[in-house]
Length: 397
Image (cartoon, rainbow, N blue to C red; front, side, top):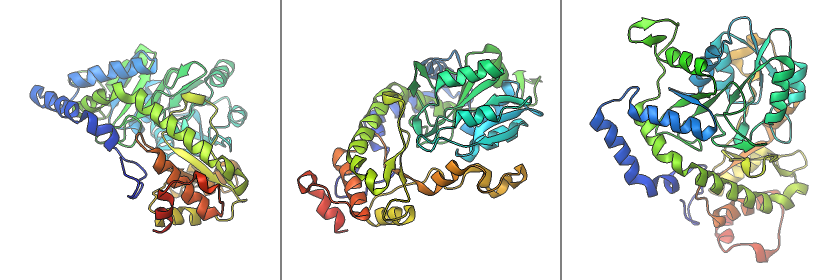
């Protein structure tokens, strides 16, 4: 955890890792002693415990979240000739996963308030070729499970969740990973549940999907040297699984701390709405796990997003943008035939959004410093009695 006089980083792992350092080292040592580095005991244990935590029956660990999408769609029978609906305001891995499966991606816009996929637009995009819909549970907030299940039932669609940012998120009585036929997770180090490198997992209720996924991740082999599928090499390392299994029991507590931080941000930023600073809306209450805390810098603001971010950097506060260019405008995918102005909400959001520091252990003083810095940059002055002593030193930097 950073102290009040230092730079406030965008992400800091020390609060999570220091208290369990001995357990982490022991879990790694156990793997070294067993020597089962690939498809070992720790992986089998983590697959089971994580799937259960999500409310799913099966878990299959793979090398990355991208592979969890690409191979997961294939395991669900999605491929060439199928259309898959997804939001354009997502990390490019969602799109790459669809394209690697052989399916055709069909973009739709997002809700400008939550940044989640616009399900009304998604319904309008359904055709006879539509096989699946990918709700991206963005920033740690789930897309409405009830509406997803209604769409699946009405149009005979597969719901394949992109839950890369939504570890143990909840909404309407469901956890991320328990809504559709399957869900893809990422364990990139900065995720709510992060490994010490890359990693991913598919969770599913369907035994046949899990069996197929295990084959696809392991060269298409159902047993050694017997290949029934055209697979690849994409296995979650046993060492990474051991680390993740050690961290998993703490995830609910870490998520609760993220929610605590978000509530403080919300309260302190509320007066800035009239100044054009508005957080992305939470429609999930405590079910939002806040992988990221994102604000919008609206046109009503006295400064633009670039100026605000630059000013915060000069004040020692690190920020991010998730994501600056929607998928349909990425140069690598021009062949899909989309153009500027096709999805106005996503395109406008990409110019407005700014991710503030968010990680377990971020202190109240640090949150206050971040908000005070934003206030000073947009020209807002609150009651001096609410300012912490650290604010004067922050402004002097």
